Figure 1 (cartoon, rainbow, N blue to C red):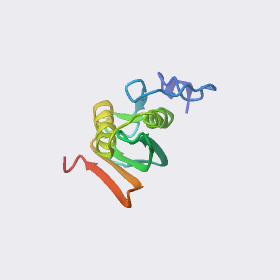
Figure 2 (figure 1 turned 90 degrees about the horizontal axis):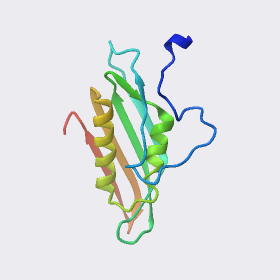
Figure 3 (figure 1 turned 135 degrees about the vertical axis):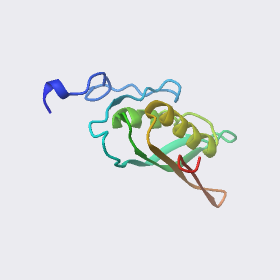
Figure 4 (figure 1 turned 180 degrees about the vertical axis):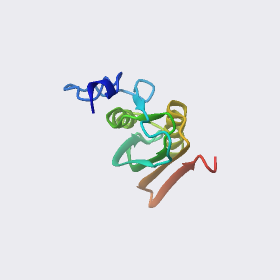
Length: 138
């Protein structure tokens, strides 16, 4: 990639020191232009290390979060997405709210052709929870 084609405005990538945002409101996801806008292709991100807090007990909740999208004009930069997902670690919220917040924030930021966000949460009280939003069905 030549210097002329390098994305601009990406401030978090390659930064030696990283300050973790305290909340999703404080986090900043960064984007770059989709260089292959002429075709539909999937981008998938998945983390098995997602954590948040139960809003009632304050106990940690763990999940695998999966984000799949077909970009239109913009793509999300992965480090900024990782920091955004980390920002839920100290937030007390229900599973459904988490997945809906991630979906809404990405849909607003990227305006993708298609977006699927799912959260597979580990068992609490002997039952697992899976929450999924698909823009084709929303």
